[in-house]
Amino acid sequence: MTDTSAAELTVSAPHRELLDQVLDKWSLAVLNELCERPRRFNELRRLIPVVTQKSLTATLRKLERNGIVERVLLSSRPVAVEYRITPLGKTLRPPIDVIIQWATAHMPDIERARAEFDAADED
Image (cartoon, rainbow, N blue to C red):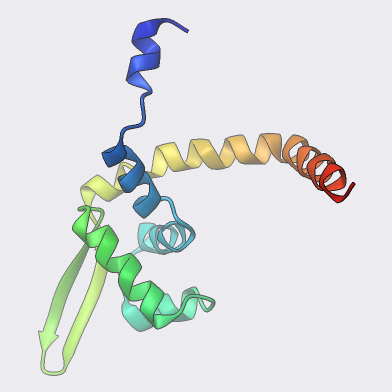
């Protein structure tokens, strides 16, 4: 690897913050659902039953703040809100798919390494 390519892969604090916010487990689950179509909050809760209301709210706010998801007011009486993936958010799909493909291809090696590590840790 040349110095130029190494510099291109430097992960700065802003990169880490963004990746932490966009690639955490709840964000990935929300993005997976919103890639299909816009969803209301309670629909997301039903589709991701293990997420708490507080965590889902925080996740949606993080994604909205980063321009990945938009909150659309459908009506004001009663208040009805829908969450949609933005054009910027849609650009996340290809790199996430690559990471998932990598994980799938290497999962046997990863599981073997985990087992070896855990066995050595017990000694």
